[in-house]
Image (cartoon, rainbow, N blue to C red; front, side):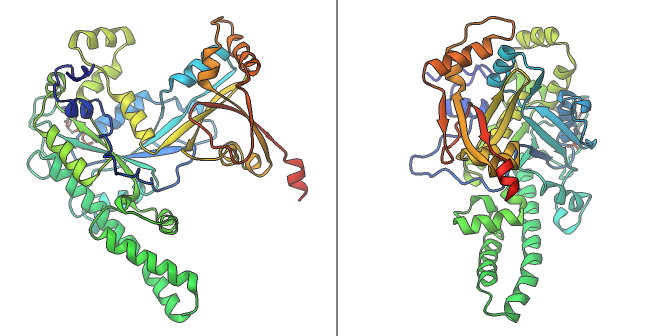
Length: 429
Ligand code: GDP
């Protein structure tokens, strides 16, 4: 018997159980992991997209309530269409608890509210066209679809397409984003074609044009991220910032009743559609109406309610999964002044990781002093006065697990790093 899911304890099919836990589907043996397009930095952004009346605003408002107060970001203006939420990370939390630093800086995910898209948005239908360009500024997409018939107030919510069909909705939005990419590519190709005609010898431009035409043909049929691209093609793709390059996390908004009874006829259909059309991407069933109530409750009240209803909030999972679908890893800097969580792509070397802190760190990189969180945690003797962190660090040093790494070191998830760099010589250059 498959293990019981805490969220959907009555699920018998292991496949469905897995899907309902929001886990990405199992990769087939022969499948190579897909290269994730785009270049997320330490500031990861996601946009909430979907048809009108599917629960996007409700979801976005919950994220606003979860978000970190604006005074924590004195040097940036935060737009009302932006919510900045903490990415829950138990390792970072533990480091903070044991170091008791003056400053605690978690990883954040910035979420953008993007107006409802309708059929024809790519041609300027509805508000869609302007907002499609907002999506291009994000790293990932939270694609909200609706399986509920009635709204939370008991009204039959109007759906722009006059019926509830989340699979059709996914297809409409996918095609709008794809068409917008086709238009964007055609706009880039036109002047390039002229330039190549004028100067037939410009090999670099000719190659670029060839790649762009290849991408264009592909995007006329499929989403850019599902192509098998060469390194050179990926470079061009990343410059184009296509909407269909962005990884999607599918948020399946259910009625509260369906969410609690863990059932809805669309779930298997959605899962099949995603596996077929967007292999490797995940879906998370939730109920925005329920989450909207939970977010307003005091923690004790919320815990009691969840216990009684045998349910759990899915919002942290949505944030975490959204963040980590981008193949991101965390490393930390830890000390008495500050414990900070940094985000990089899997596979980055130490100097590149150092560059997320400051470009000087990358240019003047000398070495990285590294230990892994797990080795540090193994040495913890829990004293609660802010000395446990440094004591464990000393113990890691004595145990020989504190390493000096050079420029080829690939940073691992959970590394705690102290970078040594030299900017003065660099500046003299
Ligand atoms: P948007 O147009 O996609 O931003 O959708 P809204 O967030 O404004 O929601 C549209 C309607 O659906 C509102 O009347 C909401 O109260 C209702 N609604 C949103 N989420 C849920 C849900 O999870 N369950 C139910 N039953 N109704 C919901």
